[in-house]
Image (cartoon, rainbow, N blue to C red; front, side, top):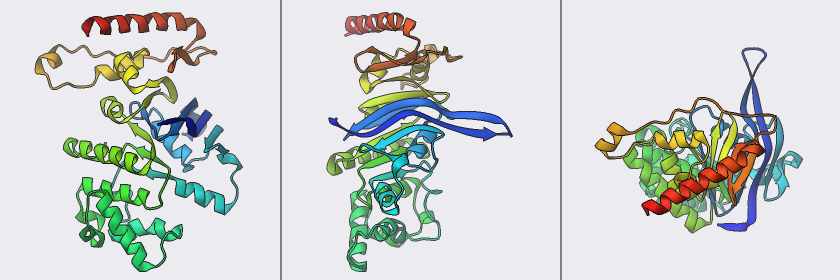
Length: 318
């Protein structure tokens, strides 16, 4: 991770939708964060919290209600030319949650992966394009035989590997992974996450990794943002968020993670989070360097004290 090079910055992003006439759904409600080159930024929260909407707004599948999104220092709202949008579409790719629904069932794997190569003019001729497709298949752990198959002939894990190969085909800089493992068997999830980590190192990629499983997000991420009802309620280093959760909602998420210990599971105390306390001045505030919590300014001393207590308990256990 290169903390000197900020690849993405989101400022006061809002994404509101109308539902049942005049009802306003605040899917993303005034959030701000940044992502550095080579980093994996995890975005975690329960279903409906706005994390996937955030990813889709960043890639411009939705246009923001308000706020700014900067990619490599460029405000996306200032991009107007077809050429510049095409470059953005090449630089920023997405891996989707459902590996079957995101693939055209009428196309062979070869054509699915080759589509981006052709659109962006990245091959010299058909043979070169076919060679690139075969190399991409090898890169994601498949082989050239898969190129002639249709999506329905592949397993869920294989289909997601095709989705990854398709994203890689245009040589992107930044990939939004929108719950890429939630539809897969547990045994396959680890394989896909390890593949993503390997590709990141080899190809110098930056990820926004969206998921609801905090333990998996911690494994792959450098930093984590926790979302609840459209707001970022906690943000910080992955290890810190996991070991020293400060916001009650983060504590609730962590308390729900099952462990392979029957005795522990029988006695486990699940923390129930009921409501987000907020005032007109509530916002994401820095509690300790690099660790932020959504709160009022008057709440900062209490959170700082809580952090010190958690740190002290951790030191005693260690």
